Image (cartoon, rainbow, N blue to C red):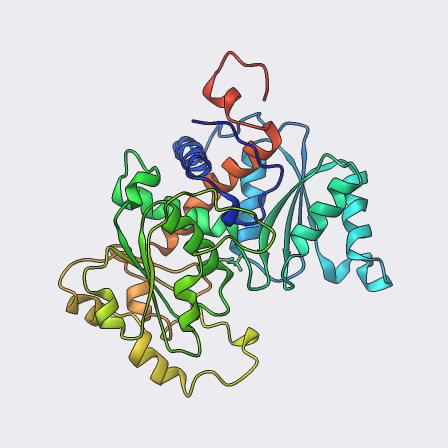
Length: 349
Ligand code: CP
């Protein structure tokens, strides 16, 4: 396992294959910890984690907070509605207030793209030793979700050794509202880094052809791609064709709150063409695991029967895996590497 070099976790475009291997290996160790009884690790004792969610969340926020507590951190949860933002305090001054209280790890979600990045840059420029984790920004990035999806798939394919190699050569279909999905974007970076072929499926209004080139060049501001050879990305309009030969399918929530124009004629029509059901999956002839980042629109992205079938739907497993993956991220950013957990003689937490 190689050295961890990231001060912040903002975008998986910056992750190397070693970074994915490090996170997955740590997550697998944390996943094996008991979840009842004496279940806390002292790694972050005395450290303050603050979650600042300027957009609603159930899973990401709660699992970051549980992850922090399982590492013995103190946790403060910022709620915009009851804060001094309503008195005109700026977002940066709000964040600096928590830093002044001793926050060392900030988990930030915002509806605007790049807010976590801008906060990280402002805090770095001010000389603060604070790590920023992106809890989801606009349509841009949701790195912890991309990592927990990767971990869930890797565990499904290779339960005993769920590293990046578990994805090599796999065909993963992502169907639905790719255009508005920061989850899809993070999954594209993660899955292709690990050698998976990704098939994006949906109508042109939700899956523009340009997504086939999404990982072809590093994103703005990043000089080179840290992954020398990525898996292929293709766009397929027909879901039954996309599912042929697939190893897994991830369906995405229709984000109607982000849709500026009327991009769909009807939800019924969408479900007919792009919805998942037992019947549709059986057409492919072999069992196929189904993922969804949540929250799910039942009867739209998939039938309620499929969502409630744990033999097929890995949705609850994704939620469970979110905690050890976020423990791994908090641990790596707070401890500055993996040495102490891998080397019990080290004195670092
Ligand atoms: N997947 C996800 O980000 O869920 P929440 O919005 O509930 O955090």
